[in-house]
Every structure is written in C-alpha cells, then in structure tokens.
Length: 136
Image 1: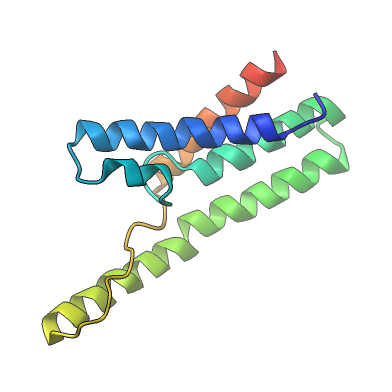
Image 2 (image 1 turned 90 degrees about the vertical axis):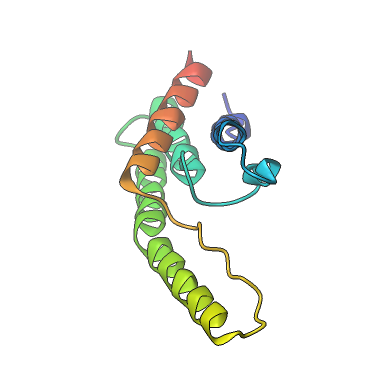
C-alpha cells in the first residue's frame, strides 16, 4: 500500500460519522454539522494520526524514520488536542459568557474545540482498528 490517503480518510470518516450518529441519538438540532466540526467524541485528529503512524510502522518498520516522524507528529497533534485546544475552548466559553452578560452583540465563539482523554483514547482505538483493517 503506497497511498495512505484511504487510511487517513477512513479514520476521519469513521470518527465524523460516529459524531453524527451520536448527535442524532441525542436529537441535537443541526446534527449534520457534526460531520465538519472539531471536538467531541471521538477524536478524529487522534484517529488519523494513530492510523497513519501504525501503517507507516507496518510498511517501513517500527524503527524506521518514517514511523518515528509519524509517531512524533501524532504525539504533537494529540497533545495539542488535549491541552491547547482545551484552553482555547475555556477562553471561548468565558468570552461568550461575558458578551451575554454585558449585552454585547459579538458573534458566539465555538466552544467545542478540544478533547477529553476519553475522546482521544477512543479516537486512537478507532485509528488503530482502521489501520489494521487496511493492513490486513
């Protein structure tokens, strides 16, 4: 397998599809938007980087520079989703609260950007399963 796009796309589509299904089960308004929105269960960012790293390790070897690069890149993406984006999410929440309280007509900032550890772990599991499905 030389083309990694199906693996990444499969992981992304699986996670975003699950987000849509979960939103529909909760009868959320505009549930279809979950297909394109970041954040929430499961983490598609984590799934994509996990599946890519696994396939790179399988194709080129677990000690190859290709796998190492994919693993480090994946670690940075996951760390960012768990920390920085959580902080941005909290800032958006507080700014929206201030704007509502003060009656400011500013647009609402998106508050669901980051991931919890459970969301990231679920994304990693999905990414691993999709990678195995493509490898085998």
